[in-house]
Image (cartoon, one colour):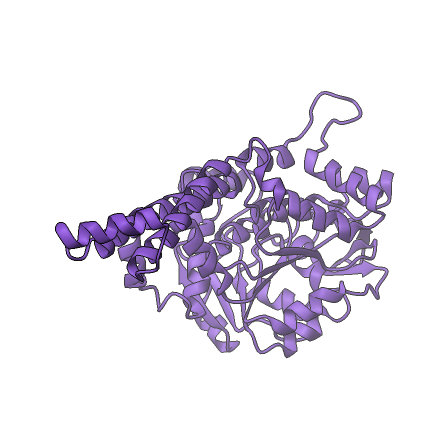
Length: 437
């Protein structure tokens, strides 16, 4: 308790004002309840009541009470604001707004999202504005770039996709988020590594536990929700193509000249992280994607126990279809092809809904992607309806630097679909709040 009085805490002055207010309130009660005070003061009050004002004691008590309440209010408000300015991630937000939104998010639905890569991070940035009850289940089969080097040299699970999700859910200062995403260049030993990957790797070695490293990283970034690897088994993603050939290693799988028949994990019987099954069972909303079909989404479904838990879950299950095909993975695929690949690898139907983008890609972007062998993903309503899937089409594109989902639009579509936005109508109380009432 005494640590609050240390220099630099910036609460002592406000505490003194609040205590002064309490003392004044106690003194006012002596006057209002006509309790005998010091003899001289009691005599003075009695004289005033006899010669000048009949209710002098009550008037003095009310005046002191008003002053006490003012001092107490100012002191408490000052303490709360001083502490909150230190703790809140965005100093431009006022205290009431931040508290209101935090409480709203705490009451939000339990959401589980599965995937990896930038697609999952895009979704998480939007979803965290509606709920803090988020569990991101992330694939750990990456074997390229910084993650691949750390995996090979240090023998730990690849941290790259997990790092992206942690940053997407972060409430820490923007500088800390930029630090975790910072990538070194030019140095022979550090070239290509991101600071966040190195931090998670170092924490894994210090603690001797990859899970602990994720938890500690979550604390540093003040993550809203939690991020879990789909499995703690160090496994490789392998692929078999329609021509009968096979390959191993996630980075080796996309091959424009071949078509993927199936992907699988080596070893085959990878056990799930124990919390993933629990999270799926307790979820109210489950979302797959967006992200690379065979190298980000499906690897999670190859972990023993996860597809079974998804199929048996009573949650609303949604698949977010990619907006563009991917050369070497999904060339020529439409929305139904994506869905059928997921069902094939999971052993049953998982999604109740599919969200597809119906906004046309800007011709300039489309031309650039065509050069890379990628095209907009088309969808056929009749074909999808025959499968008994509910199709939700909406303009979801974000075309600033790349063609991808707009995180806010996608999250709003999901929450509206699940009934948490009153079918798209904004809560009138929120409007009053935003007007500053």
